[in-house]
Image 1 (cartoon, rainbow, N blue to C red):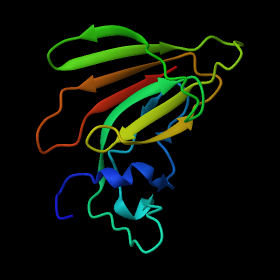
Image 2 (cartoon, one colour; image 1 turned 135 degrees about the horizontal axis):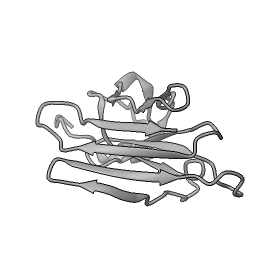
Image 3 (cartoon, rainbow, N blue to C red; image 1 turned 180 degrees about the vertical axis):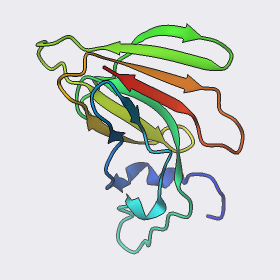
Image 4 (cartoon, one colour; image 1 turned 180 degrees about the horizontal axis):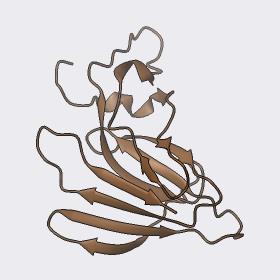
Length: 146
């Protein structure tokens, strides 16, 4: 495969990577802008030698109230939508059962691979602002939690 596109067979990849870098409570939280090829582990099967040529670029970010695979992705409340920006607020109620705050960062052409990180139990809400993509530049996504 010589294409610059993300190979679909990597959907079964076992990704070993530390998730987003989380700052102190009330501060900016960020998804990494890309996942480097050496951080991607592919279980390709007997006789196959995997190779990841290019880094996977950040595609999207969102929040969930449980660990990856729990299917507890949150919809959030849309605060602002313009031609260039979409801002969504996610609220977490203190003391509610299974009400954990997780940051989910998706990578690839359509978010085929994601990494997630649990945030502090002190987090009460997060706002994810996605800016319109600019060709040739990394996607810009701002995440603020308090």
